[in-house]
Amino acid sequence: MTTRKHHVDRELVDAAADAARTRCRGDHHTMTAAARARDGRIVTAVNAYHFTGGPCAELVLIGTAAAQGVYALDTIVAVGDRDRGVVAPCGRCRQVLLDHFPAIEVIVGEGDHVRSVPITDLLPARYVWADHRLDTA
Figure 1 (cartoon, rainbow, N blue to C red):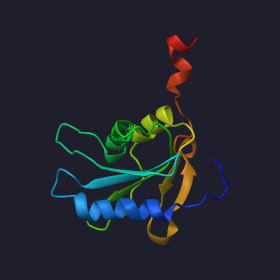
Figure 2 (figure 1 turned 60 degrees about the vertical axis):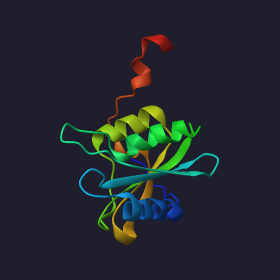
Figure 3 (figure 1 turned 180 degrees about the vertical axis):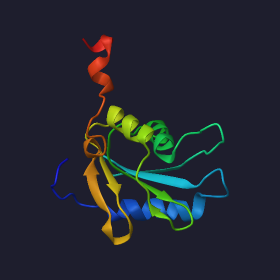
């Protein structure tokens, strides 16, 4: 795990928190995600909870970003509704983020102790899907 300090994109955290306050309604939308595109744009999304699973806000954000022509993301954060603050991504989201954006920074932590870390820090013994694809050989 790296120990270097990374800048926390407060504008990104605020965008996710604003989306959580204004877009999360009821039990179907309880999490938001915001990501900073390489060109500086901010993309936001909400989860689509369903008892069978449903995509997390981070996964919805990847599709939303692509639909807007954004394919390079630098930083991502997830925020819970009801003022729950920053929430670290689940295991599935960590793996998908690593596979799609291996250099992305993820904002994690609580309250005044949020920090930005490389996705690789959140998956120390990681499986890299691209390393095992036959079509890349």
